Image (cartoon, rainbow, N blue to C red):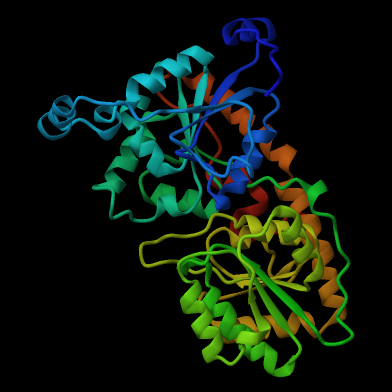
Length: 423
């Protein structure tokens, strides 16, 4: 945000002629939501403020203008009547509706960007009544079946109809949203932006002592495929006994994964280092030779957009061994910046690791191409410019009976159509 030096919001807006965007995220922010923080902080053609119901990790994600929707003290009789008799939605019976309306009006918001589809479903009654437009962005888990939200697919369809534009982090997510009922003409692809100056390129050469360092950075949850990584590493280690595997992240699967590593006989060579600060994570990338990320689709259809950690590793010149899953093929060009194998195939993943590390020329060439791919497709400023253009488009569409004519999804990012690499 630009320093307003005490000037009221409406006066500032009228003088500067800048759009005001409300960035709504239920929690601001969980550790794995760094990509959202980067995006909100990087907005520069508009002014933005954050709306949240809960502030988390404020020291990690400092932001100058955060509005917290407080939990209102509600008359229990009125609360019960609205919830159980009138069957009003949670945003109404929890008392959030009027609070949200007031703070958006106070800031003079022109548009609200809602992060995550399930949050959009929660806000649907407000979206339908507010006289300004909203856009909602989907990031991966929000396209999965959600048992805790009754009739989630049907509510998503109502959400699609209520907003002028829907943003997806990858082409694969956009295709999933179309399957769920989103009109293709409303979809726009807005990719994760990587601040390249924070991830300098490192020239990778094979270790003379055979101490290959393999890294995976992710939450320890099923769709990240860490168990597949461990099984592949166990095979890789037979020919590379000095190799080490570093797993950066936390999650509910850690005890199970530690037991698996012990059962595979590789526990002393596998390091669960937890969530790392950005400087520590950059150090880990810089000291590593190969990045693993064999994501897999969960039974509830939970899938990746484009994993942020893959892009960070690629920016430093790390080749990737991963899977043909979700948005990964939109970032990793098979045979050029890494190798991709089928989901849950640990033998194929181990073979990919061997192929990359056994050829010094391939290791170096893939690293150079990986950096170039991130520059070309995921550079932060370019993605933020695109996002701000979508904001302007949605504002212009507000009140229109039909969405503006737009290119099909396959043409919005032609370099990713059918997995063709950008040149």
